[in-house]
Length: 557
Ligand code: C2E
Ligand code: CA
Ligand code: CA
Image (cartoon, rainbow, N blue to C red; front, side):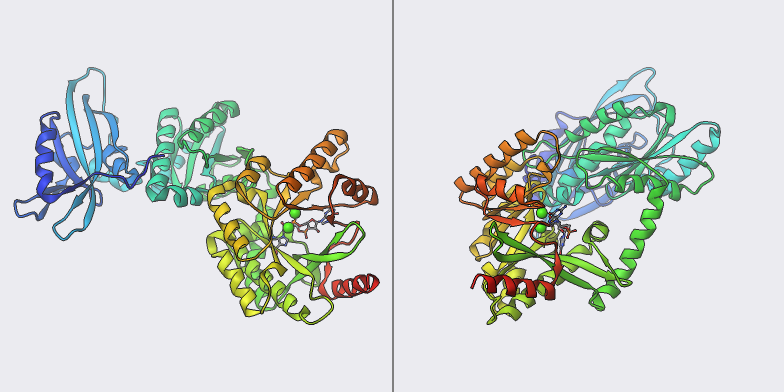
């Protein structure tokens, strides 16, 4: 992508000359502010006079539908657009610029240049509404329907064709927050406009579509017209809206087949949203259909969110420790795994981490778990357990909420710990998403003395390329990928090569998920020295771990 901040800057003293030069090429040239689409006139003394809204000045009815000037400003990229206004063809060229005021402030505005290309028979302006109606019913950025208008149009469509089977489709850009971080708000806007353009191109008057909120788009389409293969093709086109080696845009669709057209539209959208949620963590699946069980799941998730705060206050979250051992069984440390003691039951993390992640609560829990781990290491100081380490899990989202290295350093200072006692597990997928940034974070952690482990290595799809960029200390290989019975021979070859490669990269290896003696022996033969798995121990409460570890150390003298 281009650098969006790289806009031309003109001072108030030079801008009128620029306008005059452009007028030699174009029929109409104006400088327009984006806040209110008003024409700016620079007075001889350098002050600014705000004129009328630009659509009045153009004297060609209004050209707000996907206005190129507005889009250019929001995306910081010049836009060319052909418009048909009352059958007249206009070529608009909109150039975003910074206008430097006398006080030195920069104002983002657009040089809007229009060529009038005469009347074209048969070309009809399809903008039926008057200006003000249009503006109040269309989203300023994408020029799609606003939510209210969208709801009204959907209802009209459903009433007009009561016999037809309709689908409510919701589209969501995966990791849109990351897009905004990587490319800035303007880059994000450019993508939203791109998606809106795609909808405009592909839809006919048979469909109703609009922007629901943020990066969510909605489409009402007849079931007979929804062909998955065609829609996957559209999604692939959308993925090309960003050309970047580090990020590829992915849009997912949640689809709800409307069972009862009288149902509130908000409920239909909720159902499509639930379908979408079911695949939000899956990169490969792009279309998901609503199933009735999803509503029950949502209620369960809502209870988790409602109970979370009280559970934190009551200290209902605990850590269980799963030993990390050498092949002879000597304990070297443990991974801290969170458990929720809820209504007297031990709830495993997979039941609540996903929903806490979605509700942006996971980082609170993680910080709490890290602190418990640090407290524990502090408690072990001066005891026979003082040489053991504890590994903590860092979720990818934690990096957005904290400066993780600073936070962990702070914990080590608070509890007087050597940083290498608190190991840091980061999942492979987290590292791939924004490799450059993550590589810097890993380096910072590493420089501060933390041992960084790449968790779940082999589960993701870009393990090798990630290894090239990220200099972590330990590879935690997930047994999952060799657990199945098929392709055992090939799996073993891959495993042996990964262990060998880690050695050459001077990285330690821990194989996790080992369940049998045979696996341990085989992996030991391949050169793996460290293990974690049910064969040695399940995750156990801290007190149990302490007892086991003391015995284990005692045995070894
Ligand atoms: P993980 O980091 O890969 O942790 C290892 C998981 O594998 C644990 O599941 C552990 O019980 C399980 N496991 C260990 N050995 C074996 C084995 O031999 N066979 C099988 N089948 N499974 C084994 P657990 O405790 O349910 O945790 C699941 C995941 O939840 C963890 O996977 C980790 O990604 C996440 N998690 C756990 N605690 C935290 C936490 O405090 N913060 C964050 N962000 N994530 C956590
Ligand atoms: Ca882990
Ligand atoms: Ca793991």
